Image (cartoon, rainbow, N blue to C red):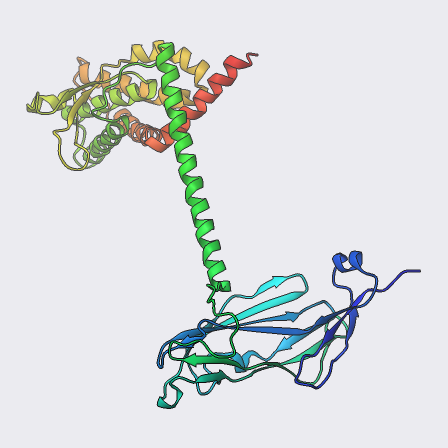
Length: 412
């Protein structure tokens, strides 16, 4: 025969007896422990005073913690309006302020907690034990008839007994334990949880950053050990060179549309296309400090890269890549980096057109072809500027190193 499991809510009042209410079982834990009806208190409250002895006018805390039963078929609904700091009365003590902490739900019980800041003022209380009056918590038992209908019972009252506080620095006569233990509230637990979560997020972020730095160091050490890394001039980064070349080529594009093509614009565009080809093929570029050669003729072959933020003289960057050099590297690009074939092909076509215009003997400029290639060059340099951005380049190098390691470890 199948047994029925239920629990009973009891009403705590001052000498008025108990209220029994049978309900369905709320969980398998009760079912596993007993086969009889379980009797529980529908409402329980505890009061803790922060200090047992205070001076006149001194602030001290009073904590009120209550537990109500909530199940699918019945629950205890407390009237919290009279527990708010604005409405609570504890005469002759005065409520200065207070707050309610976030509720905590544990199984069939919901816990709520209030903190009140109290004080007492008056000349008649020196050296006396002054009682905090009893606290009355009113509540009702609410039963669910079906999924949408609930019936409330009559109003019940839970009474907390009075508690004495000694005015001045003496301990009340009725206190047996004079130790003032540090009390913790729901708010303290919530604050600790927030700090723990924030610390975990910060620790995880720093751990990921440290792992990334370690991985970069390992990749670079491995490349140097294998002789694959070449010495690089770190005075000007490739991203700054790409951004400067993009700005130069964009200025040429605007000037050609407003004033027409001139040999000076062709020279400036050719220098930017050569730098774009070096960036796309991964070839080194010549860099000299700007103050070393600062004549105006430098603009014919070199690109002036401004210093980063404040300080420094900047650098003059140039490249000697020709269309023949691009043709020699193109078969390898198709094998190792097939996705970059279209980008490099557009840069090669621009090199051919502007080299012919610059060094041709006819002296005539094919303006339509130059305008078409200048638009393609601006798009190519935008792509290269994004690729050489330090975070993007780091991810690309990481993926490339991982792919090389997998290929070397598990060759097809």
